[in-house]
Length: 329
Ligand SMILES: Cc1cc2nc3c(=O)[nH]c(=O)nc-3n(C[C@H](O)[C@H](O)[C@H](O)COP(=O)(O)O)c2cc1C
Image (cartoon, rainbow, N blue to C red; front, side, top):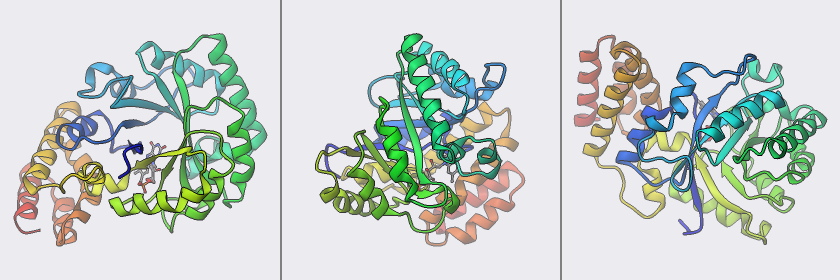
């Protein structure tokens, strides 16, 4: 992977909280930026306990609120005042950057005009940005604001207008998941549309969507070259690819693939970490089952063992199924 390219761990709700991030950085470091799953500022200007813990700098091992590798908290709200409150809270904790979720395609989120729902009404999006950037200046909030977006709601053509809006604000970075909201997480990312948008963007850009191997990253960088004379595209964000192969960032920097023992220690540490953070192995098991839905893809016989992992109700059954997967999978 080219030296100048920044690597970013995507936010994934229910999967990439601090327990996961700490274990990933310990065994498989390599990304420059890690995002928290979205935090919601509620109407009373407060976060849930779980969300406060996830951004508490004391819970981060190996990740700082500034510099590299750093943690960037993500907020999901369409209310400028609530966003500013969250930004201030996070800046007070020392965070250098706060990310806005303008990409979540969930129906319930979108019907409230949040996540990708923010893209449905460009005028409202503009008013939201007016208020948050003006408020940030007025309140002297030190944190910079980045945005994670989709190409549109229904059609990637929508991005032609949206990029005009994004360009008007001092957005620290625009992360583009190269799908429209309607596509959810499936189908092939619209890489041509992504490349065309580069010609019109004045902001630093990250590409996101279906990078599963170093070659996928190289491919999009090569495809973008002719469309990006000003070299604004300088970063790749990866989610599911890293859950499937935790050593992917290392491989992208030319390092070796994951060894089985490394992976084994990584999942052991995760299970223990979740049990401690979530008061017991029952909840930890649920978390691990979700992760294995991705990680099993790493093993040739993964599907067979995944069924056993999913069926396990007790800690002992789970651990036995995982041991067998590492031996025979
Ligand atoms: C289970 C799950 C949870 C996610 N949670 C978030 C989230 O909290 N915030 C966000 O911006 N995107 C979220 N995403 C989207 C990912 O960050 C990423 O944009 C998407 O998975 C595409 O990238 P990938 O193909 O590299 O996984 C989530 C995706 C999945 C599958």
